[in-house]
Length: 222
Image (cartoon, rainbow, N blue to C red; front, top):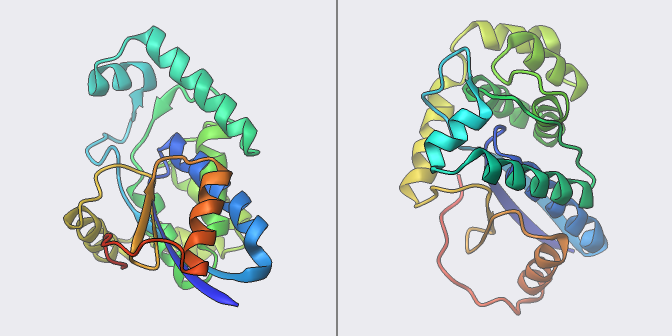
């Protein structure tokens, strides 16, 4: 059986990251008998300066990307359709929020072996249920849903625990040229970016584990 390390660089506030993760999981299911996939979630913040009260989604996207409300509506309809195709349900998402505390909990969840479960719970909380990703109650509920200790999650949120670790990892990936997410790095040598369909992920994974993929430099692993 082949071993494949996967660094999934993403943000909880990124809808394409939710689609990308679900697509990757579908692909891994198809090659599961041939592969020991080791998935590591790496932090990236799309909105690092977002204030505690968050921002209206349409206003924020219009200001950040220079697009109209009509374009945003079309993009969101496409996102909902792409999500549904891989089994993820998107709500309307009226506001966007800061995600740094979510990344601190994800770092802890990785140490506990529950990062995938927490990532999935946070995506559902943010995009399906439209709960604020910086709200302690929301984050604690996600930790509980992921099978983590809610009291420990509360302790982390009330402290600055894992702040330095997350900041260091964010700086590491940015220094390696990661400025868009999702960015998925396989065994430190191959990278796919964006919410690729499951078929594309499957082709790439099979090429890597069979030795057919051309070896090329990619951002290093954390």
